[in-house]
Picture (tube, rainbow, N blue to C red):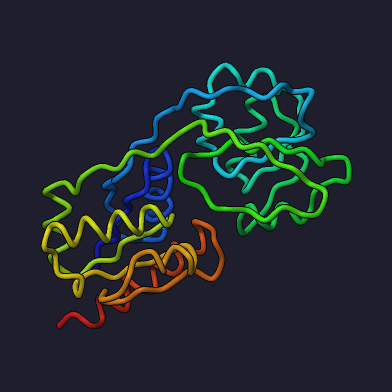
Length: 232
């Protein structure tokens, strides 16, 4: 069976691994990022109407300052982020699917002043007319080197999951620096913008039909099968 390599940070890596195993995939976890909290200056709750959340990491690493926003309306990028927001005492008024930009299209009329709690690396957003947004960086993903076991695994056909543009760029740079032949490695990206960050020269590079872990794993399952069929 073609190995499936998961490089996203924990705890997401473990969740993806469990889901991949449920699909019968030979999933291996090698997180190439470690998420850590950043010091940040809270915005007074009276100066914002709602909170915008693109990752549960903002809630895992936001710290005690999040208490100031308990009960505040929040918009979450997906169900996992929404669950973390509710656990933190926020009032989730909408949960998106397909990225934060789509969430912005469904703001309530009263929510004109947004606070975005984000990572140091994040996707740029276009705001609707009349909406303002203050951004606070509350966490960062620090890159990690390729472990020896992963380098060995990448020397034979395998499929690697890319959950973010930063992951795609870091993985591509690490493969290049290690002298690994890209022609052995197939990449399954969560979206076209992520795929673009990986460059070319891979055995295969495809994007999921929608930006979700479930869709990415469906694509990965197909690619693992295709790769296995190509190997003599």
